[in-house]
Image (cartoon, rainbow, N blue to C red; front, side, top):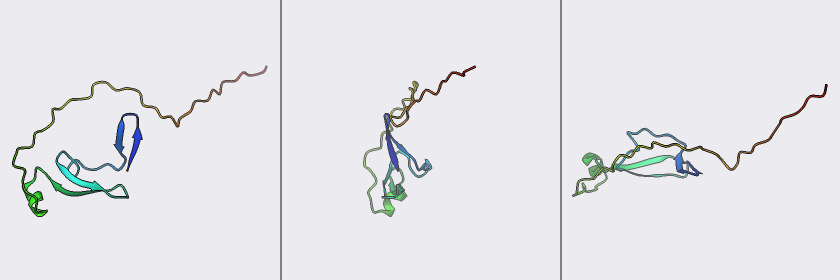
Length: 88
């Protein structure tokens, strides 16, 4: 489902943004599949699960784009020097 890397956790089974997006409530099963339960910004979705609509309006987080990308590397990758000289 997810694998550790120096910058946090990443999903290895991509999901549609219609299924997994801000306000999604659900869980990952043992196979790494997302199982949605409800969507907090959908009154219909909440009513299907007998949940109450939040009394306070949900606040969206401020968008902060990533403007600097660093190198990616793995401790499992090694380097071998294969340079050689030819005998003439």
